[in-house]
Length: 137
Image (cartoon, rainbow, N blue to C red):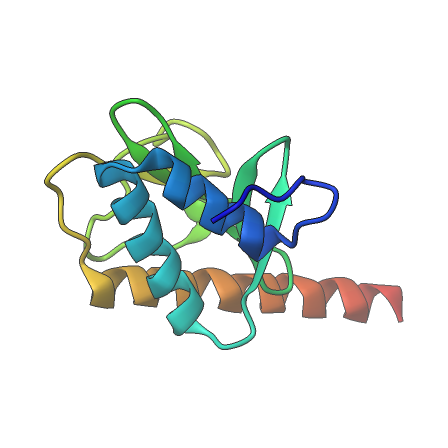
């Protein structure tokens, strides 16, 4: 795939490029996580922010997908407010707002649990937007 400039590319194209450029387990892991997030809700929108971070949104940010040398990190924008009955969150546990899941080489993704977490994040975004709308009316 030829490289598209950031100015001319859609967020989805840029995420595709990031996955292809990684060309190792991190690209595969990011691609799997991305597919799960997108399947969780048909209206999830992909964006590209902060000079190169894939972001998934619906009524606000759901999560980001960052890649590091030893991890693929899904950071949930309002993760501290989400129930995590399956214990997926394993990073950024000290903050009052965000929570993250670090995936390492050889890890598997609990698709059912991640789907539930994504849907819970979307529900929280929708609830927050509705509250904001009610206050403004």
